Image 1 (cartoon, helix red, strand yellow):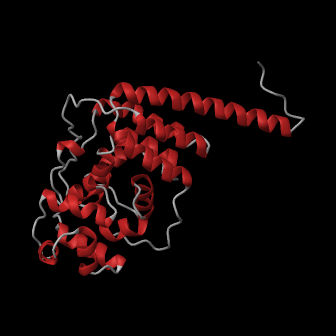
Image 2 (image 1 turned 30 degrees about the vertical axis):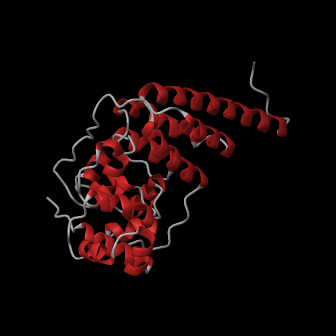
Image 3 (image 1 turned 180 degrees about the horizontal axis):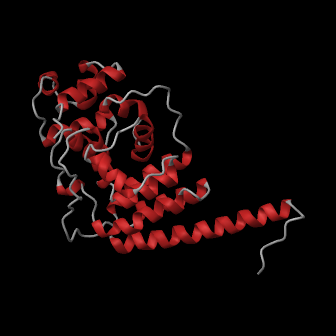
Length: 268
């Protein structure tokens, strides 16, 4: 089992990467210097501190809980684990839409009412139990309601990475390498700066990563917001995304046919 370096060590890496002083973090977070220094020295942060620290660092609180190796509070978990089957399809179809279509889907997801939580959220255990960087990133995607198949499907849709579902289980358990390419691609889907994620995980990026594509940026936002959907709501959004994607593809084919007189229009 990989030993967790401690949240203080990870926070130190992040502050050093950003060249951010404790005094500045105090001003941004409202925490005291003593509280921050105690965490940097190895004290396990409590829930309140992580919740307060997250916006000051520009992170989702759930990701800080995972980085700290602490149990994620139920209120931060996806509303409905059974929505996962539709969530991966939403993202896969959304990234094939024009920017306006992606924005429309995101607005729809945000507008849907929050339903009552009916069951607990229990992400698939990572075996053997691991506390290493691969486990952190896989766990972050699990808390965006992606199972291993969902990770394989969405990362293949958004990034150049095309791996089997089982491989993500191996990355999470430390049996497969967390490569620079994977860190960059995980970062795109998590909505985290790739260089910061590399600093946190200790993975060396041998070249500056390119900025995430607009499709990846929108996919990360959509994936985050979809955590709050019930299975029925996610299915509704998925059906709409699929329909819009088909219409968009048909429109592109018609447009190409109109520009190329030698290419026949699709039969009606």
